[in-house]
Image 1: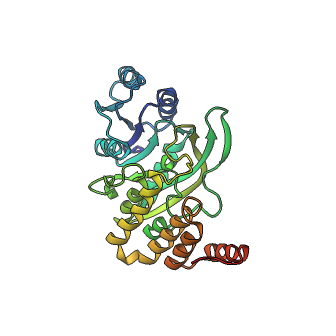
Image 2: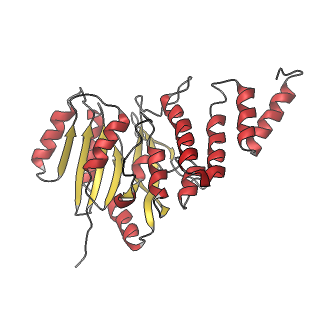
Image 3: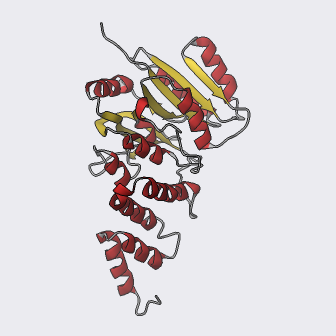
Length: 297
């Protein structure tokens, strides 16, 4: 007899009613027979909660609804979902993203065959919501990485959030870090892997990541809370895991370099280079110096 361990599908949502039904239908269409669907709604005002109650009525015993009566923010809402999960594995989803056929079955199959696999992720079709046009694939040759906690630290959040299936027994006991109000997922992956095991990439497109006007990760001309959270995450990792300091310096340098067009360009390049010598900021500094006859240091 084939055993199907319980998978908790954790969906985080806020005011995404126009996308959420499609997200839920993509989960219900999976061929994996043993799932619970946890939906944490952060006090939506667009009719989301009423829609979720109707889904729960149509599928008795399938849904666990966590419907907030006060908006708490992304990280607190993520923890509501996290602590409601009881499955052996957690498959994380945003309320605007989609699963493709076979996603859960393929990830469970790999994790069951490989007890050392703590996080299993896959490629994503990143698409424009309004046109349904594919913009790019989330993971290319340089970001299709397997490894352990060092890999997760050094190369940042290369594993798209809605592609991850996590072994629940390895997750942080306190869930997502509350000092990171928006972008707490990277630290969550790192702390999960710090409890042992490896990160594995399935080289298939098994999900779709939606891009639209209200994405938290949307590019802005100013420094966003998302970017600040990643810098703070670096500092937390340095403090908690000093044995991985070289990996921390590498990623912290990269995070600063990403902000060079929003801050003092030359000073950011110098700081990034001082933290971790890498060719890209070094070349950028040389080009900068050659562009000006005199640079005030």
